[in-house]
Length: 253
Length: 216
Image (cartoon, rainbow over all chains, first blue to last red):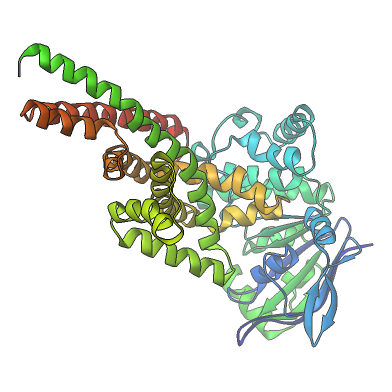
C-alpha cells in the first residue's frame, strides 16, 4: 500500500521552477533515498511533503489523504485545516540542523508534542520518550539540554522526537550534512536500525555507501526532475549519464 | 537643614514611593502583554494592521512622553468636555508609551529566533498559539532581557513625570520640600531613592538572567 503518492508535483518560486512535474510513490515499510547535486530540488520536495512549502501544481497524498482539495483557475486550494493537521501528524521531519528546542530538556523535546498535540498524559508521554531513548542508547541524556550534546546526539534526539508521534512516513533532510565526519556514523546506525524495523522513510543524503545499504528505492534528481529511479542497484549500475557523473564524483573520493 | 528636618523629608519622600511604584507596576502589568500583542500584529501578514502598528510606534517614539501625557489628559477635555481621573490618565499615557517600546523589543527578540524552530514545531503538530507560547516566547524572553531591563529602569525614573498633570509622586514631593526648606538636600535624597529602586530592579534582572543561563 502506498503511504505517499506524489503526483505531477511542481514548485515555483516566482519564475524559478525548482520542482518540475515529479511523480513517485512510497509504499509502507519502504526506504526511499533521494540523491542528486545541491540545488536539484530534493530538500524542497521534502518541505512540500511536510507542508512547509506551498506547491504550485500537482498533488500529494499521504496515508490516503490529499493535500490539495481542488484547483480553481489552476491555483491549488489546500484541504481543510483538520485534514492538513492529520496529514501533518502522519509525516515526521528531521532537519539538517536538528532544530531541537534549546530551552527544553531532551525528554521535554520529545514529550512536548505528545502532551500538547496528542493529548497524552504526562506519565505515558514520558514513558514513551524514555522507551525510545533507551532503545537508541541515549537514556542517560534524558535530562540534558541540547547545548550539552554533540551534533550526533542532537540529530539522534531529533530523530526520536520525530518518531515519537508515530508518523506514517519519516522524512530526513540531509540528516548528517552538518555533522563532523566522526559523528556521522552513529546517526547512520540509527537510521539503518529504523530501516530494518520497516519504518517508512524518505532520506535525502549525500552518503552514497549508506544509501546503497539502506535503500529499497532510489531516486536520482537533477534540476528539479527525476533523472532515474530504481532499487539500490541503481547506485552500482546507473544508466543515465548525469547519474553516472554525479556518482563518480562521490565514489572516487 | 538640620538632622530633624532631613529625617522628616526622608519620611515624606518615603510616603511618595507608593505612588511611583503603583504607576510603575500597573504600567508593567498592562504594557508587557500589550507589547507582545503589538509585536505580533506588527509581524503579521496583514499589511494594514502591520502598517497601523508601525505608525503608532513611529508617533510614540517620535514625540516626548511629556507631550503624550498632556494630550492623554487634556484632549478629552478640550474635545468632548470630559474630565477624568489624573491617575488613570497617567496610566493610560504610560501604557501607550511603554507598549510601543516593549513591542519593538519583543519583535527584535522573536525575529532573532531561527525559522527552523517554528518549522520543527509545525511538523510536530503544534498550532500557532502553542508554537508561540511553548517554543518562541520562552526563547524570546532570554534574548530580550538586557534590552528589557534598560526600558524597565527607564520606566521607574520616568514616573517622575506624573506630576505634570498633578499626580503627586516621590519627585513632586521632593521638589515641594526643596522649595519649602530652601535646600537642594530633598532633591539629593530623592535621587538616592531612585538609585536604590534601580539597584533593586537591576538585581532582579540579573537573577532572572542567571536563572535562564541553563541553556545557550
